[in-house]
Image (cartoon, rainbow over all chains, first blue to last red; front, side, top):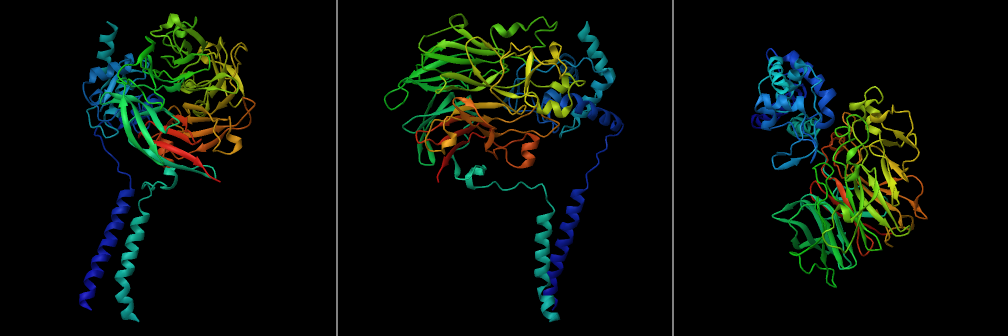
Length: 148
Length: 419
């Protein structure tokens, strides 16, 4: 009898363990960004209203046309350059991971400094990106530079 | 009995484990239907993938000898036109040439025509429809506008020695070039179909005729032999809601405007950017950039489409079926390859299919129907726009089979009918 209990126990343990794993996996992970949770929430609203139509809900963009916002230095790199793209729009050829993207992006200078900061914070911390937040002050500085 | 139960317990546990694990992962990718290469088709039709992983396979043409010329959007190792030889349901790469990526490709009167995003070339064919000098094409048209957006120069030829070339608008709705709404200035050299001679080298704009204008972008076009007339599929404008939220809901912006089929005559004006077609109201509407509000109709001087399809489906291929293999109702009707949408977000994306449009006496007759679907993959892959395959080019084989390219994975499908 004892011999048979071994595999039974092992299978039961496996059964329960995988079950628990499945349960845990189904619970959505809440990600905490200290001090920027509100900015993330506000940024998501701006993203949904302004950016999603072209860059898509998953930030993956559109083949040949609208560039992805994932794993690219355009998004995760230099902040003033990124802010400038939002304020001025973008008409350059973009090549990301060997793919070219050609649609023009309209300027979004009608957004407030805070809205630009929020949406860029959201983009830089979403879709697998792990870059730093953008502040309204940083946007203000770039906006002043563009005007001059 | 109890002993037997204990003995069987591990078996139950194992079954439970398998069932439980099978159920817990609802987003697992469905295995694609191996039959019909994953496509769904009307009864009697079947599909096979005769080629795979070719690259961005755009338009194609099939010769009577069973060679397929397919044009890639971007050249691979300096070659953008692949020549595949068909042997039943399989193909082998025969050769490749042309150092320019592009979309257009056609055969007429002993020549292969192909376009880059700015020029049109032709190659003399031998009596087996093989290119004689792949390295020395004759440049027919040169210097067409290529400003990245809507840049493919799709082509079609008539029976009188002319070639028709699409020159797409390098803009969604011209607002970036017409801020004061005094008239779109780019219409003189883009947003239309130009006509050139098919045999005259090095033609520029000044050698051609602006055959029809006010067409935002055309990728699918074909010469209708019954009407002896050019038919084109226009890609309608984007962003009605994003630009005019007070006039258009998100849902309306996903459904509108129509993707239109036009039967063109010389001098026609389809109205871009001033006009768009509402397929629900069945009328041309005044564009919101030029005083429209979603209700005001357009000036009747603009050309009406002969058929209209849901918004953003992106028609990239048009073919009039003249073969004898398919049932009688398909004869002289139109197949349209819809590349699939992106500007329907946040609504689910749609398109990614081949549609059949019945024709009678050279005019669309009756409701269009989905002919081949399933290119996108799962419902989720379709809705998110992360489609696996995207239909682009269409061609008819010598035996009346229909060929469809996919420019995402580079698959070529062969669709056949048997009673």
